[in-house]
Length: 109
Image 1 (cartoon, rainbow, N blue to C red):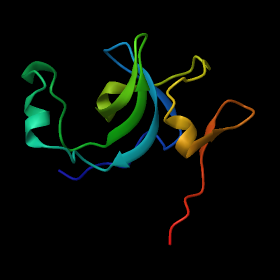
Image 2 (cartoon, rainbow, N blue to C red; image 1 turned 180 degrees about the vertical axis):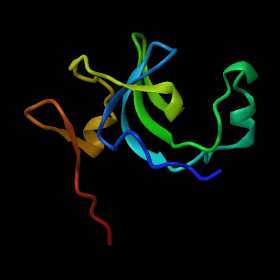
Image 3 (tube, rainbow, N blue to C red; image 1 turned 45 degrees about the vertical axis):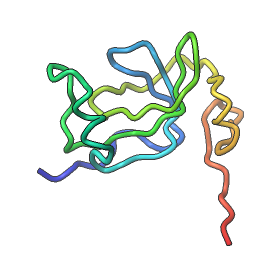
Image 4 (spheres, rainbow, N blue to C red; image 1 turned 30 degrees about the horizontal axis):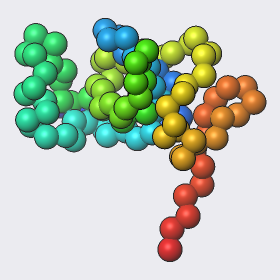
């Protein structure tokens, strides 16, 4: 089965459908691109399909900040408008006056 196009975009704030965390998308894989060990570590009854986009997030919950890898089926748009505190965001994004996030230009040589 061919992966569909991504529902969410880089720079978009999302929240997890089941677990209490939210984050900023900084990369998208068109379909699962992590280790088989990681995928099998998810309980089978909640294990996501591999044939969908997976998102890399600068994530945070009430206790900590971290990087998460989440399937599209488990994400919802975050419409709270609350700022994110993950310190990694400032390295790659600027926050616009309207609260949205825009990727910084990347210089390469």
